[in-house]
Amino acid sequence: MGCAGFGRKSGRKMAVAAPFPPVACHDLLRQRPAPAPVPESVAVIMSETRPSSVLFICLGNICRSPLAEGVMTEILRENGRDNGIVIDSAGTNGYHTGEPPDRRSIAVAAKYGIDISAQRCRQLVAADFTKFDLILGMDRRNLDAITQRRPSDSKARIGMFSLISLGREIEIPDPYYGGPEDFEHVYRMILAASKAFAERF
Ligand code: 4NP
Image 1 (cartoon, rainbow, N blue to C red):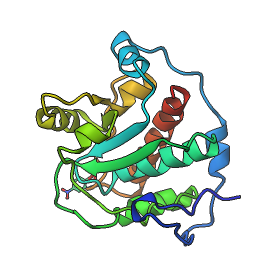
Image 2: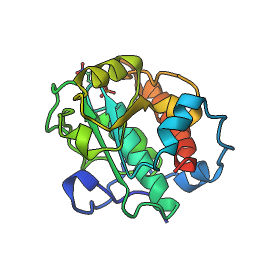
Image 3: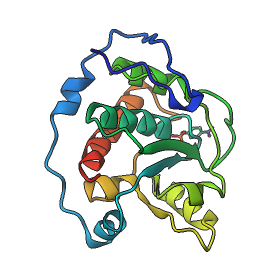
C-alpha cells in the first residue's frame, strides 16, 4: 500500500499521480529512533496539553513547510493518530499565495509516496495564533517573524521544529535556490524531525 493520495488543503482526496514509482515510505517510517532527551523548555512546551493542532511555518510556504505538513500528516495517518489532529502550514511572506508547492518539493515527496500537490500556499495570519496550539518554524528567521506577529493574548506555543522534535536547534535550510539534492536533504531532515515529533504526541 502506498502513502500517497491525500491533500488536506483542498478538502478532497487527490488521485495519486506520483512522477516516480512510490518507494516504500513505510520502510523509512518504520525505523523509529528513541526520542531524543528533551530540554526543559521543550518539555514545558509539549507537556501542558498535547497539541491537537500544529502549524508548520517557513518563509514562502512552497518548499519546506508543505513537506512538513505532508510528511507529518502521513506519519500520523500511518500511526492511526490522524483523528482530531489538525496539521497545516503557512509562510511568513505572501509572495506565492495561492500557488501549489514548489515542483521540487512535490517531486521529492512523491518519490517517497506522499502527494502534496493539492496544498496551496498561504501566509501566516493573526487568526492562526488562536486556531493552533503549536506553531513551529523551520529556521530562526521564521521563528523571529512568528514571534513578532504573535498577538499579546495568544496562547499558541511557538518553537523551532527541530528543537521541539529532536531536542536540538538545527535549522532546516531554505532549499529554494538549491538543486534536487538540497530538496532531498531537506526532506530527510523533515522526515527525521517528524518521526521524532510524532513520538511526543
Ligand atoms: P520556503 O522556501 O520558505 O521553504 O518555502 C522559499 C520559497 C520561496 C522563496 C524563498 C524561500 N522566495 O524567495 O520566493
